[in-house]
Length: 387
Image (cartoon, rainbow, N blue to C red; front, side, top):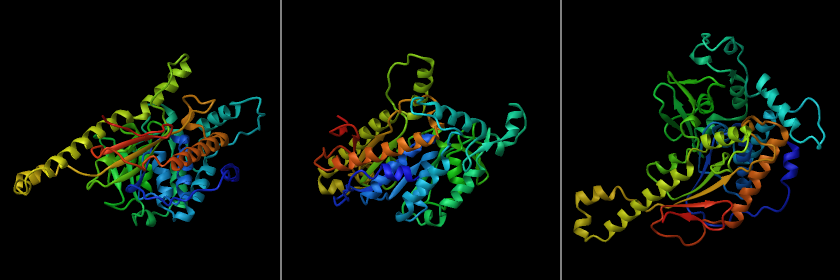
């Protein structure tokens, strides 16, 4: 992806010499081709000497996460570039700039009809009819066997399981409809865990792990920030939450607008309300800790108070939310826009957005001591916290 590297040689990189407010967590949403935005964000962090201590991903976010966790720091950007170069769906004929969007349309239909080498290929048996018995392990319109080979080629799972950084990927348990997070801190992860996290039905078949079938975690929770908030023990954290689906948007005027807005709402996963609830919960935890500290020492040391104090905490989590922009020609098929221009523009946008955030460092300063979760939008000058 030489064209991508050239585009990002725009100014000198300011290395991170500041004190970060805790463990660095990278949370990567699902979104198919939109995931090149995440790669750009990581490149900016890497160039600023900020490497994640923990990466959490769903779907394409899990794939990008494995490429980072499964390679040494000096090789990570190169591996991401190689992966996304393999994902490019180039048009058969070049089209002039006066025909914007034509190449992207052809790329879309090429992807739908023939798949992407290195990612997925059509499963012909699935097209014999909805009731044709393809079997549980092949129940998808495409096969992801090419993706399995690609990941085994680009990801060193022995590095993943060294837990530096820690890797967590989310998948949906088919039979129970429960979310399950596979965590390298708790057990070894392999290529099947990554494939399960990205097995979006009905396009891709479920993946069997420990005898059970799993689908893409995004159908339950496409923004797995909850894994950080629910972690035990909780730690002070700087969380870069990289989102590709816009939670807000204009009133749709056409059916194309309806399809696009519907998908944004579906996969943005109510992230704003989730963070608001976490802000409220963490404020209460801080209040509990403050109240316990004001009790007389003999009461503070009683068994009952010690048990109650366990519901409190003093950790502070800074959530930096980066949101991928909508490109001029985008519509509801944007998540399978693997055109070279789409990949390049989203990667560049992620890089520039992350650079802007790093230049501002909004997590530096004084904050309400009762605010356990502080939200920073990449377009905002000031953080937002719960009242």
